[in-house]
Length: 217
Image 1: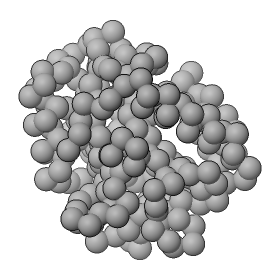
Image 2 (image 1 turned 45 degrees about the horizontal axis):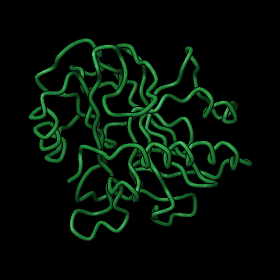
Image 3 (image 1 turned 90 degrees about the vertical axis):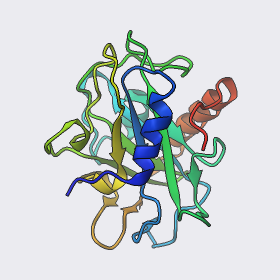
Image 4 (image 1 turned 180 degrees about the vertical axis):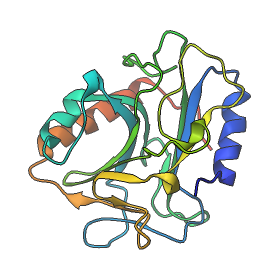
């Protein structure tokens, strides 16, 4: 069942009070009864990052084309311990990530250097990764409203409220597993991913060095 958590409502207020255009708040649940773990069942730690993005040129990610993901990846937003949007310790709220973004009317992400161009309806994914384990998950079910499927809003429109996408609503795992009743998210070992992950890590560090997030807690 689709749900709206307190954290996504709060994030919506933060984003909309800044008079941004269409956008998305994305997060995992606070106070979650299920855990995000690696392939051996250990809690995800500070070595992991989470990215929200889409894939270019109609590319469809599968477990058979892992080596092509990074080249096709279009970053929307990132959560990690460097920008403070991934809290693996979760002393107060439990382990969680959360972030948000808004679009410029031309299709770029506001404030994101060298942003790709985005269009309405692109399917978005959350990519969790460290140097040898990944999970790639999304929500493909249409549901009853725009929050119920992870497809991008029209960048050219001004929305009163951004979309809110929560990990607890994801229904599809391309790699790893999600919402399986035992874990909220579980990564899996991927074969020789070091070159691809290096591209992702460098991209994240460049982004962080050139831009400070607007959506701090």
